[in-house]
Image 1 (cartoon, rainbow, N blue to C red):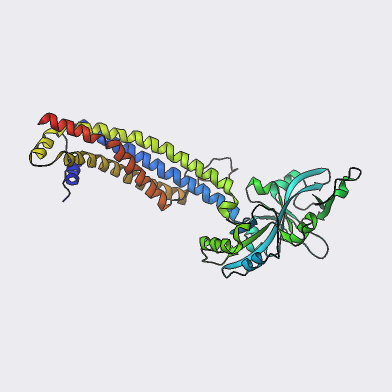
Image 2: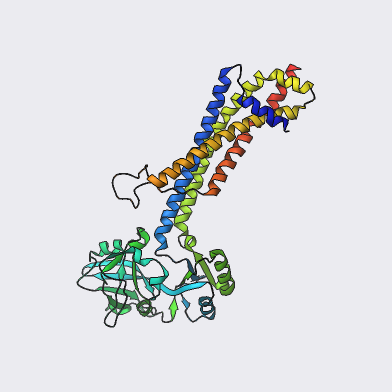
Amino acid sequence: MNLPSFIARRYLFAKKSHNVINVISAISVAGIMLASFALICTLSVFNGFHQLVESLFRDFDPELKVVANGRKFFSMDDERIQKACKLGFIDICTFTLEEQALISFKSKQQIAMIKGVEDSFHDLVGIENLLKGNGIFMLKDEVCNYGIMGVGLMNKMNCGINPTYPLRLYVPKKEGRVNMTNPAASFNQADIYSPGVIFCVEQEKYDDSYAIISLELAQQLTGRDGEASALEIKTKKGTSLRKAIRKLEELLGPDFIVQDRLHQQQDVFKVFKMEKFISYLFLSFILLIACFNIIGSLIMLIVEKQQDASLLHSLGADHKTIEKIFITNGVLISLIGAVSGLTLGIIAVLLQKKFGFISLGASGNFIVDAYPVSIQVKDIILVLVTVLVVSFLSVRPIGPIARRFIKDSE
């Protein structure tokens, strides 16, 4: 039997001669419980927003994206790229080409990003989930070329979903100087019509500046025949993305970079991680302050149990054993508070996820009505470990205090 733990449990739940000790202990438990509750709820909200934003990008960004390292474009006939397309774990792969262009409609002009895609792009991502309008996803036919704009870009061009006139694209030619007498001659030009749909990712990066066109048209406008800016990949169901990335990197070598969705939107998700970490630090600091209440209750407990400590010392218990009794008592207070806070926090998060009783506001301008939440096991472990580490560090000075009181009573 572990003597310090046994006596610490008895001291924790036994009735004290001074009721104020019980009150301070209860306050300590409540403080740690609230801090743990706030920690798990806050981390779950950040997880929820992270998953929400990731789901928005999922219908536009591919699972994996291969881009050239240090170059903007690469040859589609590159032997390594062709071998990568034939790997067993790849379900669909498609070449894309992105470049800036000037879009003109009547008197409106706007710099935008054109994204040339192959027909298989339709099956690569969930673009159908993003389309708005009565038309269909179509980029070309025997008569003309089509383009699908983001909802924000459409509003900037003031052309509507089904414009009567075509939109004109201008891309600077790769070679030659600008003809000052006829500037239009220095640009490759093409007209695109609307297929009756636009896309809405709910992200300004895409909605306000992207237009999807066919890969052939994009290559024609940029003068990049047989070249692409990225190879976008959808893996077969059940494929481990980590293993897929490792195999692609081994095959393609240092001339290419393989990105998953998190790396494709690195700036966005880096902000989420930073905000989550800062919130964790602030709440951990509040937890540290709450743990200081334990010191007060332990000092009063040491004073009350001074004679018991002297008796244990007389019976052969050394100073370290007696110190462990009071330190264990403090850790038990922290553990009770942490478990209680985590339990209440998990229940609150599950209720929020099911019923959404905490809303984002009544304005109706948000993607979702209620705060998105998601519990992760690693966050539960993180909160529990944080509470135990912080509480142990805060009660560690109790050892010398207990030793002094024991010596005074001898």
